[in-house]
Every structure is written in structure tokens, then in C-alpha cells.
Length: 427
Image (cartoon, rainbow, N blue to C red; front, side):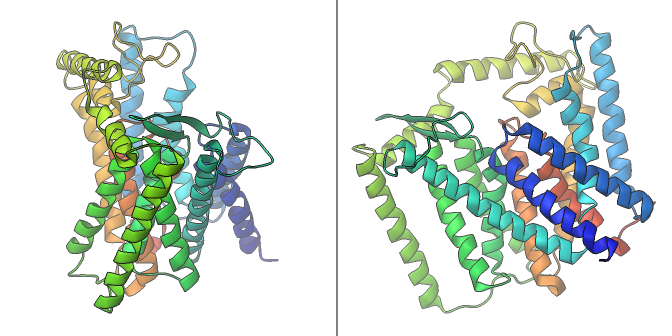
């Protein structure tokens, strides 16, 4: 067997296992995830050295600037007295391991064949995730009986009351990238087969139900944003690419009507099952509770925002250090630097320079992905379109959720620098 084909098979098997556990169980099965990740990173590094793969110069420089500044910021924090008694691996992982690992992982996908295979994996895994979530929800509601118990912290927690409806499933953070990704794929009207087409649409619908029942305002907001974002990005590309095909308007209207009927029927059924007099009112109240600053969590969040801004004003350019924190507002004793308002905390810690490097990196990665959308390669363009929408929604959701350390999301977006290297500046 050809060595390259053998390595590609290893990539396929190990990569699928890694992605499945990373996306389906973000907080558990760490041993499996670390082992498979190490195998992927070693193989990628080996290929770069042995095959002398071309590395995009702009990406290399960007990562170097990122690592250099955040290392300086970490040292500055220690200098200012924000030290800890041990090496905080989570902080090191987010700002130093993640960009290097994402770079190595993205370099695995260096041709269209691998890229298409990766996206097929993502579609199947996302379907598996939403099916698991729906089964979990039905099981916790005693609608579906299973021979094993799903009442575990691996899956999440449940709160069902007249004014609150929350199925907090841990993999919903993954769906904040994957649902927008799938919606954009569906919106592009490009599929490898009818089977993939219906699989995507069923997954989108089930994912919407999961979001509705989740109680996660960020997840629900991301769905609305992804729909709007897909429309806007498609309009921007309309001069170069025409994703939406002309179709029978009657068929199109019937499809919309069918979706509306299914959603309304699902609402009524869920309301009866949950014994809620007004199902939508419970969903509505749960969403609005995030903006109630008179409540306990809302007041704490507002106070945190005010204190972080005041702290940033004291050192606006370079901040107070990557590992700095508010001495009178510590969210966690083990990770005192970690706050729910992620980007505001980053501004407080690394200043204007740090926040510019972060969002500058996001901008250039998103721009590179956007430029990969090309009508001459319709299928791969559709996948890049999905990744672009998913990545932007991921960054938006990351403003109030500690998601920026997810290696897989950054590696997906960085693929635009590694695929079709003949178009890239290499070193």
C-alpha cells in the first residue's frame, strides 16, 4: 500500500474519533481526546518535515506575532504580581498550545479530497450529536425509556418549570459552530447527494429543537445571527458566485409551509408533554432572563463589566497582564483570570494591543476563508461558506462563553491557508 494512502487512512480513522469526542463530549473523555490529538499532531509535524510542505507565510507570521505578544503579556502579569503557585495549564493551552495545534491540524487538509471528506465527517457527527441530544431530552422527560441511565454530568442538566425551560447539554457549545455551519451549507443548495441534502435538513431541524429547549441564550441568538449572516455573505458574493438556484416557487412555498406546520405541531406536543400551559412563554421568559440585570447573575455580570472597564482604563495600551484578574471579583479560585465576559476580560488583561491581535487574527482568517469561495469549485466553495459562517458565529458566541480555546474551530478556519498551496506564499 502507498505510504500516503496509509497515512490518509490513519488520519481518517483517528481524526473521526478525535472530532466525535471533542464535539459530542467537550468536557469528558479527556484521555481519548489527548491521545488521538497527539497522534494527529505528530503525523502532521512529520509530514511537514519529511514532505517539506509549504507553509503559508502570512499565517506563520501571524502566529509568531500572537505567541510573542501573549508571552510578553504573561510575563508582564507575573511582573505585576499576578502569579500563581503552579503553572496554569488551561491558560497556557488557550493562548499558546491552541494556535500551534490548530496550525498543525489545518495542515493535514491540503487538498480538495481531504477537505470534502472532513466536511462529510462533520455532517455525520453533527447529526449524531443532535440525535443524542433529542434522545437525552426525551429520556429525561420520561417519554423514551432506555435500558441505561442518561442522568449524568457527561450530558448536562435539566430545569423544567412554568417560567423556566432549560436543557443544558454540554455539547451545545459545539452546536454554536455546527448549526450555523449546516445552515449555511443548506442555504448554498450544494450537496454531494440527495441523501446528504436530507441529512443536513433533518439535522438543522433537530438542532433547532435542541436550541429551543436548551435555555442557552447564546445558542438561540447564534441561530438568528447565522441566518442573517448567511444571507448577507451570499449577497456580498453574488457578483462572483450564485449559490441559490432558481426553483419552482410553489414547491418552495410548500416546503416553508410544511416546516411551519411541523414547528407549530412540535410546540403544541412539547407543551402538552411538559405540562406547561404556555410553552412558548416559558421559552421567551428563559431567553429574557439573561438580560435581567436585577437578578443575581445579571447583577454580578453588570458589576463585572464595570470593574473590568475601570481596570482597563488604568493600563489601556498593554493591559494588566494575560494572567491578571480583579482581586475583588474572582469568578474561580483555580482560574482567577477567567471571566464570563471573555473579550472584555481580554481587553483588561492584554490592552488595545492584545485585543487588536486577537480580532485582527479573526479578521484575516475569515477573509482568507471568504476568498476561497469560488463558483468554479461549487462544492468546496459551499463547504468554505459553511465554515466561514460557523467560525464567525463561534467567535460571536465566544464573547459570553469560554469557547475561544476550542482547537477544532480554529483549525477548520485555518484550512483556507493550507488547501491548494499553489495559491499561497510559502516559506
